[in-house]
Amino acid sequence: MTMKWSGWALTTGVLAISAMAQAAPPSATMLSYACAGCHGTNGGSAGPSMPSLAGQSKEAIVDAMKKFKSGARPATVMGRLAKGYSDADIAAMGEFFSKQKLHATDQTLDKAKIAKGASLQEANCGRCHIEDGKEGKDDTPAMASQWLPYLQIQMTDYLSGKRKMPEKMEEKVKPMSKADLEALLHFYASVK
Amino acid sequence: MTLERRNFLKLLGAGAATAGLAGCATQPGSPAARKVVVIGGGYGGTIAAKYVRMMDPSIEVTLIERNDHFVSCPFSNLYIGGLMKDLTSLTIKYDKLAANYGIKVVQAEVTGIDAAGHSVTTSKGVFKYDRLVVSPGVEFRTDEIKGYDIASTPEIMPHAWKAGPQTVLLRKQLEAMKPGGNVIISIPLAPFRCPPGPYERASMIAMYLKQHKPGSKVIILDANPDIVSKKGLFLKGWKKHYDGLIDYRPAKKVTEVDTGKMAVMIEGIEEVKGAVINIIPPQKAGHIAHVAGLVGADKKWCPVNPTTFESTLHKDIHVIGDSSIAGAMPKSGYSANSEAKVCATNIVAMMNGKEITEMSAINTCYSFLSAKEAVSVTGVYKVNAEKQAIEGVAGSVAVSPDLSEVEAIYAESWLKNILTEMST
Image (cartoon, rainbow over all chains, first blue to last red; front, side, top):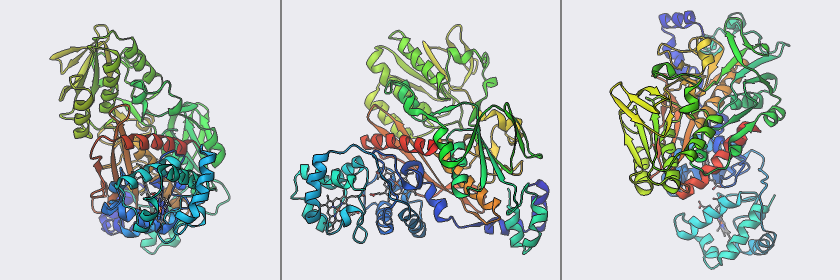
C-alpha cells in the first residue's frame, strides 16, 4: 500500500468506512489455526498430555468450550481462552476440528490393560462412548486414539470431583476399581 | 494503515479495474508461479511458510534462514537451571517441513531487500517474490550500554537471549562459579522478547543455586519500575521456594559494563559486581528489518497493518513476530506462531484476489517457577476496527490463579506440539 493511495483514500473520506468493511469476519480456519500451537496442526496433538481435537465431534467440542467459558468445567488455560470467543466462533471451530482426520497417536500402552479394558468397555461405558470410543452419543467426546496422559488427568479430575461427571457416567464409574478405570483408558487410547 | 486494493476497489464497485491498479508481479491465473519468500526460520517464519503452502500449494514458498537448525528460547531457562542435559529437545531442523509441504529451504544470509524490485539479496543469490514475510526476531541495542563490545562482551557476560551457544555458556558459567558468588541478571526496559522470560530465568537460576551453590544469590537489576509480567505469581513462587535467594531491584537500568572488573554500572552512579553476569540488552527489530527500511519512527520496531501484518512502510512486505508492532500482543513464540497464520491466511487471500479476513490470534506463555511448577498467561486477540489496533478480548487475557504442577505437565506438551508444528 503506497502512501499516495491511503492519502487519496483519506482525503476522499472513504477510508473510515472501508477500514471497517475491509475484512470478512474471522473464518473457521482463521479461528482454529490459532489453537494449533498447543493442540497441533489441524488439532492433531503430538502429545503426550495435550489433547487432540482432530476428528472430535462438533457437539463435544462446543459443549467443552461452553463449559470452559462458564467455568462449569475446570481448566488450566481453556477457561481463560474460551472467554475470547462468541458462540458462533465456538461453533465454527467445532465444525473445523470435527472435519479433520482422526489423529493416530504413537504412544506406549500396556497390552494386558488394553485387553482388560476391551472386555469392560461395552457394558460399562458403551452406552455413551459408542463404537469403541470412536464416537460419542450426543455431546459425549470421542476418546479413540486420545493421548493416555490427557485421559488420566481428566479421570483424576472426575474422581476428585473437580470435574463433574454426567450422572449416568458416575453411576458406572464410581463402583469401578482404579485398576479397571486405568485399563479402560489404555483401551480407548489404543483404538485407531 | 493499509488497505487491500482489490477489496477496496470491490467496495467501490470497480473490480474490473483491479488488474491495472494492483501492480502485483503476477496476476491470478497467470502461468508464471507466484512466489512467497520468508526470511527467518524461527517461531514465525516456519509457520508462515507452512501455512501458505497448506492453504495454496500453487504458490511457491522459499524459506531463507542463516542456520541449518533453530533452538527455541522458550524452555531454554530450564536448561540453564539444570533441568535438561542438552538442547536437543529445543532444537528443530527444517528437512521434514520442507519435504512435507514442498517448501524450498535455503541456508543463506540475507543482505538486502529491494522493495521496489520485489527481490531479496542473499549470500546464495537473489530471490524474487510477489510477497515477502520478514520474521527476523530481535537485535540488541548494545550501543545503549557503555563498554559493551558486540563481539567480546557476550563471551564474558552472556545475554543467552537467543538460544544456542549463549545458553550453554551461561549454564557453564553457573556451574563453574564458586559457592557464595552472586549472579546478576540485568533486564532492559520493555518491550523486549518474552516479557516473563527474565523472571523465569531468575527462578531457574535460584533453583540451581539453592541446591548447588550455598551462599549464592541472584540479583535482578530491572530497568523497569516493576516486574513486567506475572508479577504476583513470581513473587509467590520466589517466597515459596527461594526466600532470600532472589534480590529484586526495580528501576535499576544498567548503562555500562566492565568485563575486566566483572561489574555493571547503573545510570553512572551505582556499581554492582557479580561472579556471573547475564546482560539482557535492550532490543529492536532484527537487523534485516532496519536494512530494508521496515522500521518505524521509533527506530526500533516495524509498524504493520494489524489485519494482514503488511508493513505500512513497504508494500507487499509483511513483518511478523518480535520485530513487528502487534499492538497488545506480547513478543512471544506463541504470538509469532499465531501472527504467522493470520499473515499467511491473508496473503493467500490477497494473492488469489479474495477478501481478507479479520484477524483472530492467541498468545500463551508458560513459565516455570520450580522443577515441577509452572504458570501461564493467555490471551485471545482481535483488531479494534475503530482504533485499527490489536487488542486483547475481555476476560481472555489473564494469568493462572496459582503455581501448578498440572500446568508444568501441559507446558511440556505445549513445547512438543509447537516445535512439531514448526518442523513437520
